[in-house]
Amino acid sequence: MAAHGKRVFAAAYSLLKNREDAEDVVQDTFLRYFSDETQFESEEHLRAWLLRVALNRARDLLGSAHWKRSVPLDPEFDAACFPNEESRALFCAVSELPTAYRIVIHLHYYEDYTVKEIAQILRLPQATVKTRLFRGRKLLRTSLEEELS
Image (cartoon, rainbow, N blue to C red):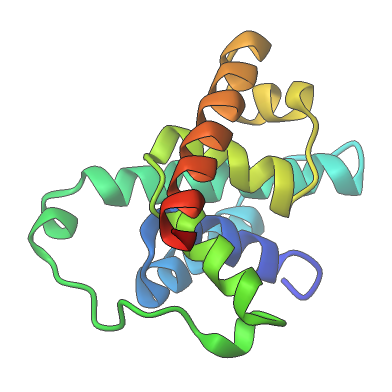
């Protein structure tokens, strides 16, 4: 939990945009880890597994009837999580991207995964990941340019 909790939380939060739900996803993810007897080849394999479980759980929440009827309690991001205003603005812009692009952007830039690793985590073809990164960057660039204008 100490080694990977913040990363799992950040991945869930980037999808859900809600602190409480992201914390629930972190709890569910680590409960599954502690109750599962899966053997991991390396620390990197464990990290990828935790992120995959967290992202799947976050997607499940997004599709639930409860989520569709709920209103977030705290729509603003915690200012303390960001070293400066530019980092916060960028994270906010990323969080406004469609889910498919937001996931790959988060894994690539915030978690430092390669296209191949993202494809394995999300169980997608590498070409799909590359396309989503390209389109996500394009949407992000447009959004940031509009904000600066």
